[in-house]
Image (cartoon, rainbow, N blue to C red; front, top):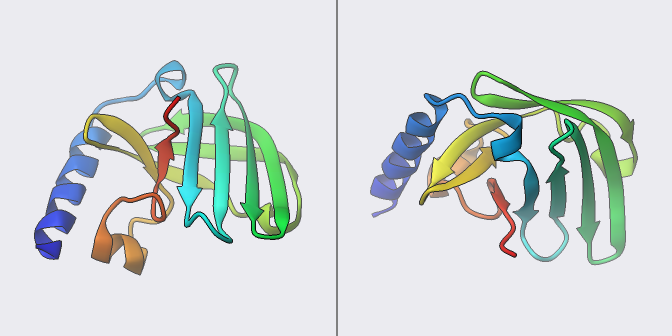
Length: 129
């Protein structure tokens, strides 16, 4: 079952990569984490700015902000501010789609992602309102 899930996730991701996304279609609030010590909240604004913050059991572990753009199948970040654990944490994210929703995968070669596919821990997913 897990190999099938991985294959379906990769096919969905690759199918989503063929379309060129716009800044306005990707703008929004996203989450990636484990709901304990690794929780990153990412806001992509329509004006090309972004802000991100890492929260854990002890509070804020760092913040980042700057500009973002779409280059091919990736969101590329140019930070103007990075503190603590967020220093160098966001460079680029691969754009994909799963169940009709956009998602961002930091590393397509990540062992967890390769084994389990895109979930809240391995990929940024749009926060539900």
